[in-house]
Length: 193
Image 1: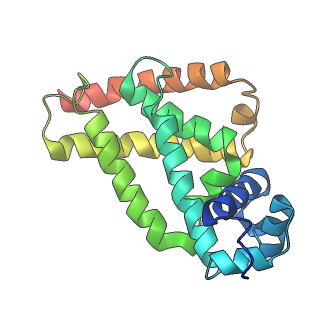
Image 2 (image 1 turned 180 degrees about the vertical axis):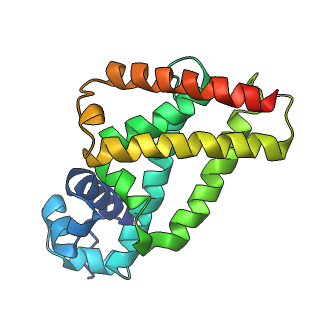
């Protein structure tokens, strides 16, 4: 009689995701997954073809986690919330943020980045700032917002900036982001008008 598999592929993906959240994708190995599952490595290789398959599943899930952060209401303004979600994701999910920018997964990250952009564009379709603009102009505004948010998020994630590193609470990050957004919005508004 054949032995029944102890773990499903979903169990393996979940264990891998937890490892990456705690210590980064560079520490994701079959042995680490086995330790997380309190198992040997054999069940892992009976469920998946390679560790690369597991890594890719984790990277895809990281994108879904990011989208959840961006869809949350942080300030009440969907445009600000989207950027804040990205920034807070980089702080709270440091290793997942690194996954979605890892060149080793360029194909997945390019595809999911495009999807994320389209989802965000749809979320902003009714925003007063973008409502009456052409799609090309709305895309440009969203991209510029991303450039600003990515810079802030990268500084926060890396911890290299003393000014950003001193932001030790979610509220402090939100306040600084909103202040910077106001400066940017004034310039953007004058460019639109």
